[in-house]
Image 1 (cartoon, rainbow, N blue to C red):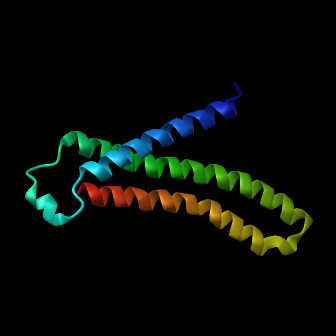
Image 2 (cartoon, rainbow, N blue to C red):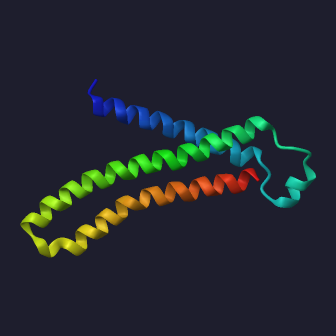
Image 3 (spheres, one colour):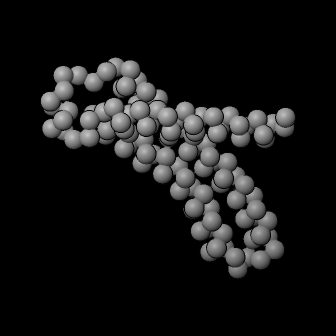
Length: 116
């Protein structure tokens, strides 16, 4: 198995764990503050999985964004060397690649808000 295929298998496995943990947190933790006040305490295992899910969401999205920016940035420099007028289009593509990290951070914040 190629190293790139191993990396992709690892990332997909971690993504599956992230989805499972986030589902557990979103289903098990009450949706509103009134329901949270009515319950006695949140199970520590749920809080633990919530922290793991938030860390995975932020960490994996940052890794994916770094990989995407590396790939897009490399291609962008090559394209700009041949056609400098493509600068605006290239910056948009690099910005889209960086947006992956922002989405992961937003998901992590949403998970933290759900935990309480």
